[in-house]
Image 1 (spheres, rainbow, N blue to C red):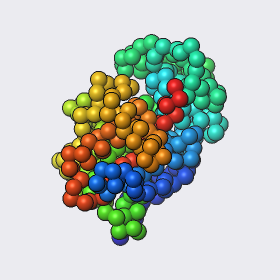
Image 2: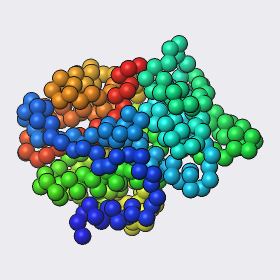
Image 3: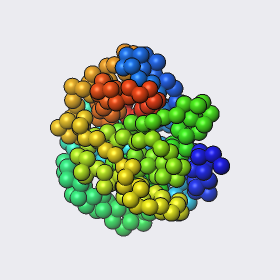
Image 4: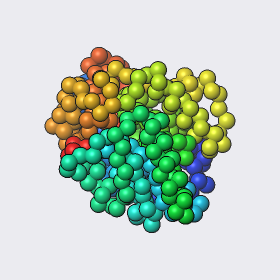
Amino acid sequence: MKKSELIYSYLRDIPSLGMSLLPTPLHRLNNMSARLSADLYCKRDDLTAFAFGGNKTRKLDYLVMDAIINGYDSLITFGAVQSNWCRMTSTAGRVNGLDVFLILSGKKPGKETANLLLDRMTGAEITFTENTDRDDIIKEVNRKILELETQGRKPYYMPVGGSVARGSLGYIRAMAEIVEYSENSGVDFKEIIVASGSAGTQAGLVAGQVICGWQGRISGMAVSRIKAEQEPKVFEIAKDSLDFVGYEYDEELVSSIVHVDDSYLGEGYRIITLACRQAIEEFARYEGIFLDEVYTGKAAAGLIDYAGKGDFSDGGAVLFIHTGGNIQLFE
């Protein structure tokens, strides 16, 4: 059995909505490859073709289907005021007949733009909180859940980013697509570079790697927390995802392939760095690909720096996953 078929076999009986148009395109970055003397490719998960695209649609395909199957009448989640996750949740709920309740952390802006504008357009009910502590935000979410249940509603709670085992199945599926591309094209990737935020995207890729035995390296570029905090999050969600699909694994093996680099995080989440800004400009000017300042710009800064240090000098192919988020450019 091919490696891609092996991964697909673990997902076959798990219901999914199919909002995302998959597989997403995967192509060579000819200009950036020449510029950086490396063999670079990009998987375009900004082109999932639902609600302006992005990695979150893969997760919502599984999570919203679970909500529907189990008779929930609404979705509730939280995120930053300009959360990509909340934008996609708002749309996914409305399209599937579910009300959406968002708890957004940060000051309510005078003018609603970008993701927040789209949240409103799709009809989400929004509660703003100036709390930034995660525990305090979750308390706000729990108060809203209790309020809704008191009204006879049945809300389906999803943590930020959909980064739980069921949501991460979307990136087990993405790993199958990557391996399938290699099987069909003969291009063998030695490294995958991806932004690592709420951890579910990287965790799904790691779980897919464990299942199929892919021998390359997945480098998660930290965008919200340091390596010492991020790697355990990726590890736990990867294990939960493998448990979910019924795959037996060695914990030491899983731990050994979880790699996070926080060198490009800068001062923290949503704080742009000079290297991030330069990476966004290079991708736009040389490939016509627009990245964002929060996730993909920082991951691309890592990619460019790795190439500059000669990490890709052996000629092996490298895959950059564009996880979307470029709506943020219009804040």
